Image 1 (spheres, one colour):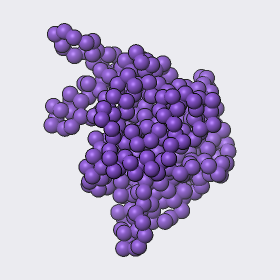
Image 2: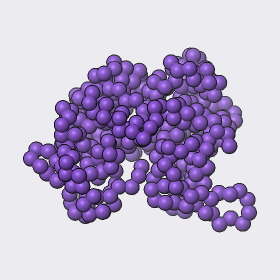
Image 3: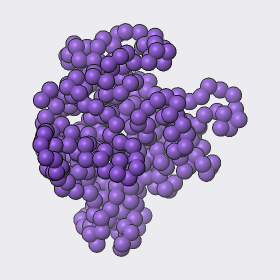
Length: 379
């Protein structure tokens, strides 16, 4: 994520801001410009402070305090590029649902920021029955109803997320229960979207034999693989070949975990680059752990990303430990794992790429290391 500034007063802004804290102007995110836009009212619409010819409307979910993305005023859409993929949202008349849903939408918009920067195909359910859609559901037990618990997962383009994952206490309980090093809303989204893009970029692509050579044969029985994983856990020495314990369960989960980590790397490197970070550890001798983080990770070759990432994570983890916190990035990138990350990078890089490709894709949507949906309804 890059740094944003108010175009009216130059105040630094976070991606989630809907109003400048200095000049108090409303701001909104324009995915076509990949920037937060300072706004001035103009009738029932808004115009850009720095570019008065640009007219916008707020996403309909802004009314719930759940979205700060913009819709072109000339568009017939009520929802922004991210929110129009919502299929089911919780009953927002329940205050606790609204609080948790807002947290979910923050993470989802960060997901969409990266996907749009990567120029990934994002069909919705109106244009493709298997297009990307989201159901954000509440466990029946919360309403004292009978029924199975909501399971976070992916099914043919539909990503379901249990609203309880937006509760920090409950999410930490589950992280501990399942013996995970890392569990966040954004991590959930990045993992589940990995399943979606396996279908889109791998399943019917000539790269499938290479996928099987790198990750294993996905035709192995998925249900039995998960049962075996939960009964016996990962095999000995799994850390040399998998980025997480869960990745060992099945090639699909290995790919999704690897995809999520690739998105972690790219987004964090962009942030570090935006801050001009340099890592120059004062070591007597040994490995060169220095790096100048000055790159656009969405456009650089994979090796350059890894060269920057390894020193950065060493520094981040060291800082966290100085604050009495556990490692911010508690994972090992072995040569085998880096090879898998390289596969993900290559699949994304294989998408059409030109100076105007992102803008062209967005306009269309608006209109209709190698080893070195429809509008939301309530439920």
